[in-house]
Length: 351
Image (cartoon, rainbow, N blue to C red; front, side, top):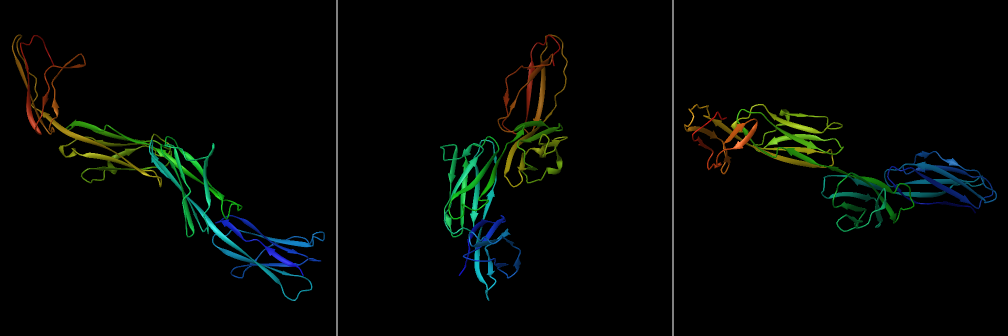
């Protein structure tokens, strides 16, 4: 009496696998027929009868996405009925989640294994080999088995460059199956804004420049502390291959522009980062030229509005392109006021 045998498999979802059905203790060639779990016919590749081994094998190639089974039916030339073997496939899946982080911060990537029936061992590796726990550098956590799922994590504590890592199952129920590994990545980016703080005279122009590093595609949104979306007022360079700069421009600043401004950058699915700056506005009026004879005193008066508490007003003498402080500074205690500069016994033309 011949025997029909097959091996059950644990296989990664969407991975191609070859299933084999073997007949032993036969004296002549047999006929194979394969069906799937729905009863549909599956095309097979049938080997020749081996007289020396008294056996014959048939195989099918499948790419399952869920748990399933296949039936191999065998009929010899003298049999009235077929002998069958059912080959079961337990399908698992490995899902990687990348991370996008700012320069110098912590990056965490995960490797989730689903469809398993027991705890597996997981190793993360990079181009230099396996990664182990190293204080203040990396932490590997294989996770715990929960019903059908296990989630392993790799933490890089100080990300200073992009990194690509491989998550591999090294022991457990399906380590002999093909495709038990997947890649995960940490994308590093940095964001800055300039200037961070500025005092601008009403009517003057002012730009805030937001710059991003990294090589993943980004989206930029500008907003102000009063809740306004200012994205349409910004100009931007090519974020995929250019300098990755966005500029928020004010052609003529008004008193209403005394706000904080935030540049928010979304790095695809990797992460979100923000950089903020603030602008105060000031208006200076009432400063006019004055003339005097040599030896006379001259008084200049400067009126300002929009100054904050403890802002400093300073007079300067401008000569040959150099600014020279010519009087003690005045600290403001309100949003508006007047300060005077007295030049005693002038002897030459001064600006």
